[in-house]
Image 1 (cartoon, rainbow, N blue to C red):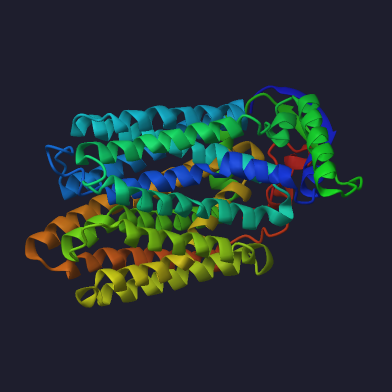
Image 2: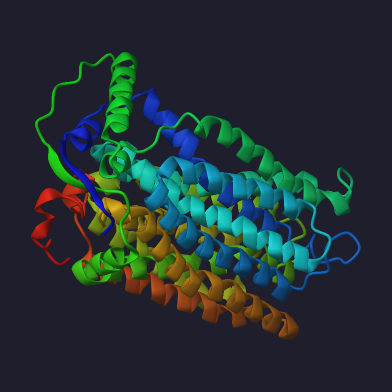
Length: 487
């Protein structure tokens, strides 16, 4: 690891975890969590705009395969961005990176709106993905380190589920923007991307007021700054809640380090926590293939096979169901527990998806959307919990990079291959006019989801209500000379 700068005993984690919920926590949720709304907006706009991007005169002359490729390259950018910015987040702090990554997203989204050629569009989508991927690492780590332990599960699941607020907004937004009687077809899809950048600027203004993680600060030798931030948070929460905060007695002794080597991080993930590594990989691959494959190409499926001219309403219903699932089920991840809820939502959604594949030949746009809404009501809560799992079961010094790592490898395996595979299936099925040829994609997604649920059931970690430091001891903890239990 990097050079040791000192040793301190601190009660900062215990003080943050004992806070009651207050308006201050809502500021954190709005400033940080709303990035998922942007991601949902981006993905949905691409799916809804598939037909608008195909004409060579008003669009960019893209084929169905190109639409799938655009989805894949967006995810590829997200994987690279997650790994790049994830490492920088652990090295330079949460706040610096969650401001930088949002800036990257804003610039890339504006470039997308001004795309003149397919190559330009693909490049802009790649950069947009980099910004969003970096956000996942910086934001999840910051949220978990600022939200009290007893609320962490429900907040994380609900925030990750807010992706679908953006998806619903994007779906409804495309309805007027794709109406040639309201907006020129050559400009509608450009305005949709441009509005995403406008929303991001608003988020950036709120985000400037979110502090650096005190947990990150005390490990990196800036305990005085961390203490000032915690005192300010406590004062604000007492004023907002009207509750008097009781002293805490739990402390942790830390050997401060300026940097943590990548070798130490890799050893931690693969050697000390192999079971947790397997669980995270399975959860991310399953949800990435399911979502990216199904949702990136869902609009294309509706228009190609089911004679839908305006996909916005269908996608909005689908999106509302996803957000409702994450919101309504989120509390259960703190009460029923992580293992049961994650395993249950993954297995149930996988079984339902596989069953839907058998009936593709007889579906209508309405029945397919209804089945999708039921499936993803459960899948959205489980998929959101995948990010929660990766962000809380590894030591603090590795948190952002672990999120990035599992997001990248899981998404690369499921999120890049998924859109390409489904795009190929749609082109093939379109040539024959047989929608049932897409069913194989549903079956693959079903198997991956069920397998991930079973792995979670046997190897998952009980993390509900526990401090992050109790779930995974920091690498720099004073008693870390004793190897943590392999899990």
